[in-house]
Length: 238
Image (cartoon, rainbow, N blue to C red; front, side, top):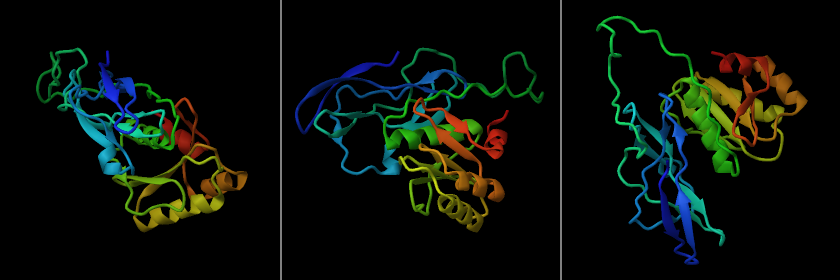
């Protein structure tokens, strides 16, 4: 279970009880950032992508992965960044990842386990939408997800090796121009591309995406990306 700490807003001095959310490791174990109960929260004035993530090691398999830093919204409007202690998940489980599975001779190829179901995160803010898209891309097998070098005309750009993604958390359906801009930027970087939209797409945008080969996903508020076209279905497949 996630630990609960007492957090005091440095602006209005209001007290909160906060429990860090847990995220699904590739091994299936829940991972949550270990909280520093003696540290003071910091008020976040501007969101910086590199500062919004923290490396946490899974206590079960030993994988160290980047997860969103714990944050809390105070009633006064201040966003509080909760301090994290160390880098190992406090979840129970003493197992340590091994290079060779027990009972398997070294050098024998072990079939990869089937991909686990994606674990959604409820979308309440634009940051949640970007987090869900990043976690989904990681679930698809893309690693080293980062903020894209070029900022898209709307939304947030994410990048991984060989892939460029655009996350649009606005309430406006994506237009053909939005899809074309993503495709052109990906072409200049010799990358594939994928679009995530919270409000969906116009009919013209879907048609344009099909002609350009751009997978489209809609982010529903439960935090599960839903394929919109056949290209997204194929990307989402096993």
